[in-house]
Amino acid sequence: MQQNWEQRHTGLVIIRLLTKKLKSFLSELPSRGRDGNNIEFDEDVEETKIPNDVKEGHFAVIAVKGGKSKRFILELSYLRNPAFLRLLEQAKEEYGFQQMGPLTVPCQPEELQKILEDKIKKTTSL
Image (cartoon, rainbow, N blue to C red; front, side):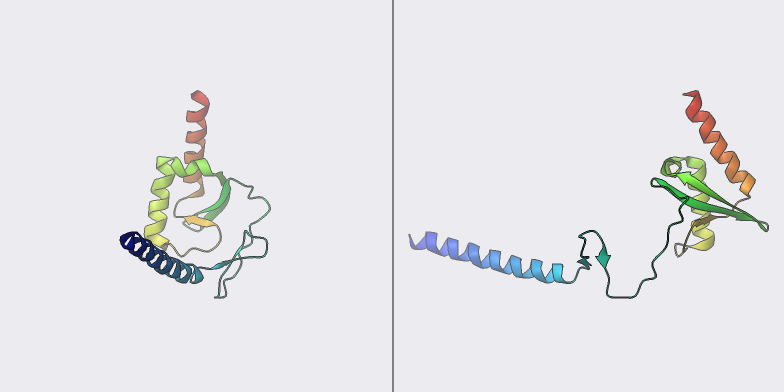
């Protein structure tokens, strides 16, 4: 009987310690906003406005090279396109990950248009 009591006591002590550590960890995370969805951060972060033409499931891309630039709105499915992924890799090398606003890729607008048209051709032929 003494052994059962000691096991329960040890179990309770462990649970209390884990609870304390969990509370400490959770207190360091950003808190939820009033609506339960937004996350509030302590530091000031400039809010990025999403343009009205960028619908849910899409993202904006700007193709820039040689003084030419053009903005495209792409479906998220293009993130699986190998040719587009190569452009993203080039963008990472040239611009890094600190881009604000639309994603900028280093290619002629015509090159990106061809990649987009090739994907459309492949999906319609299936």
